Image (cartoon, rainbow, N blue to C red; front, side, top):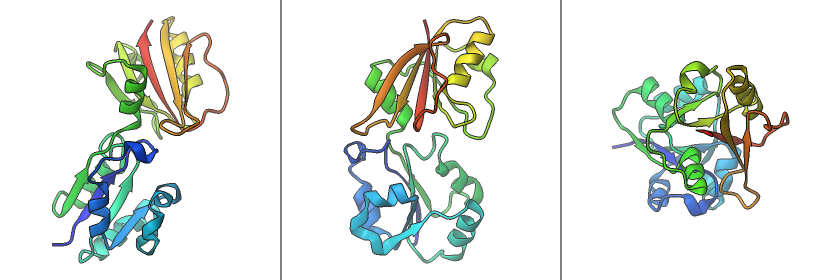
Length: 201
């Protein structure tokens, strides 16, 4: 039976890709992803399809039930990833969601900070409830260009709180950078694709 597989491919570097990844790719008729994601699997370029807009993606998935389709997902598909969207749009039948190592999980391990009791969230296209968020002793957060590390620091400062802010950029790549700040020292600059971890000082 044909299947749509949402495949987590980890935080970036292939070293952190789970072993079963290539099994799903070998079974695929079509592999859909961003240019960056597809470039990782250049040996199967004949299967590649550039990720379209979500409305077009839904139409394509619904129109091709006879094909085994793999949809690539950076990190973990169900941690603020495309896996949730696919399930909500198409239901659970004939859909398999394969986990991957998320960038948040990866960064906690690089810092050797336990993830126990951590609150996970994202500012992608949304404004977090900072009053709620900052009640937690540990927060892992995927950010965007609108609410990034500097804006998070300002929200902490506005509330008269003191927190440690770790910013991870280009995680898992050779030029990875993880920088420790607090709400006073956080830089107002453009950050590369990043994850923020906030801890009590």
